[in-house]
Length: 108
Image (cartoon, rainbow, N blue to C red; front, side, top):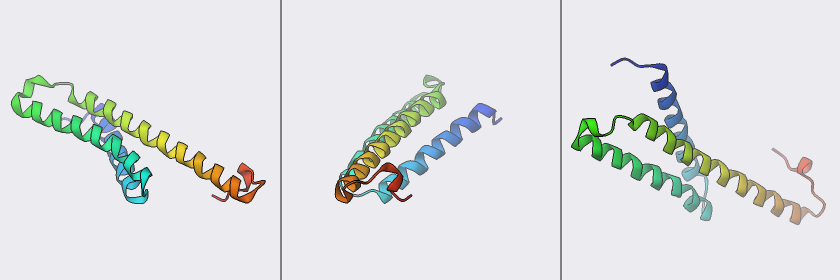
């Protein structure tokens, strides 16, 4: 099997998505964890569908790497949006509790 540049890009992107997904599920708690589980369920169901279809007929799903790449991108986008939304909520909460806090005042 020849590994092409596209295969490396797809594999790397899927690996980055999986690492971010696991990190979100481990580090986040409560509602944030449930929100982080949504892309895991969607991408997981697509992965199961791809494996099933390839098991039935190897010629039925020749573009599975592109489909895996696209769904991983959707999952990573969802996780990024959730991270940003919860970051803004936490910043607003800190700002409310500190009175006149500015974005510059919040430690990294």
